[in-house]
Length: 237
Image (cartoon, rainbow, N blue to C red; front, side, top):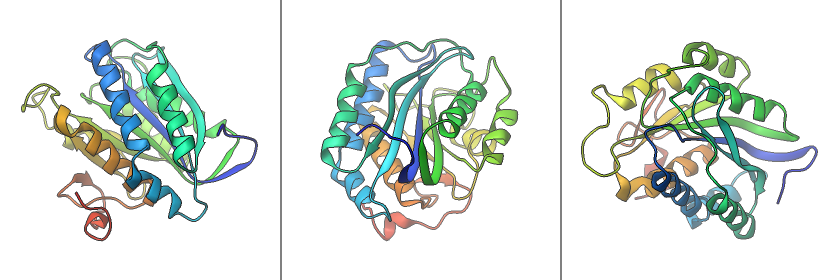
C-alpha cells in the first residue's frame, strides 16, 4: 500500500541502485529483478512480520551523476505478500531514467531528503547504496554527504557489486574495504558483497533480511563495523 500521513513503520529504507555508465540497460533489469525476487521472498516477508509493527516502508531509486536520481518506485508500505508483489511489479515495469558518471555523494543526500520529507514515522531509518565502484566523479564529496546523513540519524549500508559476468573484481582496489572506509556508517552498518550474477538475488535477500531485523552480519558474509553473526542464529544459506 502507498504510504500515508503519519504511517508508523519498523523501517524506512531507501534502496539506492547503481545506474551509472558502467551499468547497461540489461544490467538495470537484472538488478531490478534481483530486488523484486528478494522483496517477495518468504525470508524477507518473515523478517517483516517478525518485527514490532510488522511492516516496512521502501522506496527504490536509481542514481547516476549529480543531477540524475530517479525514484523508480515511490514510498510503499510492505506488510505482506500482496504489497510486496505490487512493489515488485512496479519495479519491473518503470523505464530507466538515471544515467551518468558516479555521484555517490549526491545519491546519499537524495536518499536523506526522501527520508526527511516523507510522511512516515520509522523506528529505524536506513539508506542502502549499491554500486560497482566507490568513485565519486561529480557532485558533493562522499565524506561531506556521508556525515550529513549520519548527523541526521540515518544509517548507511552498502551492496558492493563485483564483476557480473566473471569471477574477477571490477576495479584494482578492494571494493568492500572502500565501501567500509568511505561510504557506510551508523550503528550496525555493514557491506554485503554480490560476487557474481548467480548470487546477486541471494545477496540482496540476505541484505534485506539483516536490515529489516536491524542486525549486521559477521565478517564471513560482509565487512561490518560491529559484527555479531545473526545468520548463525536465524537465516541460513
